[in-house]
Length: 299
Image 1 (cartoon, rainbow, N blue to C red):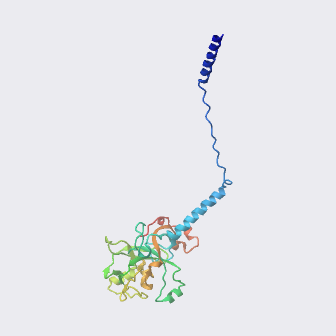
Image 2 (cartoon, rainbow, N blue to C red; image 1 turned 180 degrees about the vertical axis):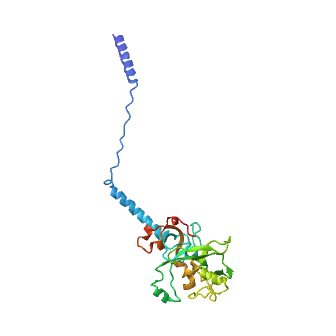
Image 3 (cartoon, rainbow, N blue to C red; image 1 turned 30 degrees about the vertical axis):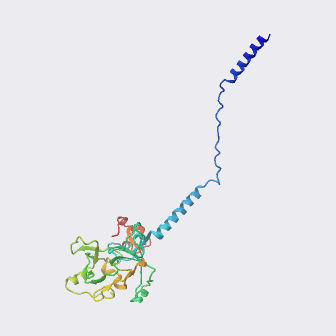
């Protein structure tokens, strides 16, 4: 009897081992859910988005106008026809090295002869009564002139010519006259432009005819850098003149421009209106624009 029982026991053991060796189906992969971050606050409204964009733009504009660019207008004709009355200029305030020295990796340079600069009017120290009679307050009004004399140079203006260190300064001289102080000059050539003439200046036909006739002009009111009153430009100062030479009160009248009063270099015209045609009308800049002047580079 023990034989059959042992056989059944062996069969049961074999079946048990076979069942334990069967391959089990793999468990399905566990799916992890990622929780989305909850919004920290209510969604921005359209008005808030516009407001934030406006604030950022305003901050950038204030930064740019404070350190890089400045807009100025030209109310007088001392720089005609290079700059016209009614031109609105954009000024580069960053181009000149402060105090004559700067960092080499910055796009800056020293002030050069021929640069058209914007500066605070230094005032007439020789005849301050002239400022008072015209209600001019030193350091309060912006002037635009061309740099003629650099620090340490000897300057002399004589018979409608400029001499630097006793050498004739190359300038393209033209005749230029106007019927009033607002309109552009009517110009004409009287001498050929030379390769070294980098810019043009304008003299009235009356003064040029007098000089051609051999006369020496008496320049009443001139105190600096003229015949009989030659001047050496002081350190960190500049001698400036307007391009309309017979219609410009400049360094010949009131002296030199200290470096610290210089705002920057005039770049280009971003808007212009014909003050003469508008007869001083309040809306003249809208009714009489000079569209052909927009984008004109000042040089």
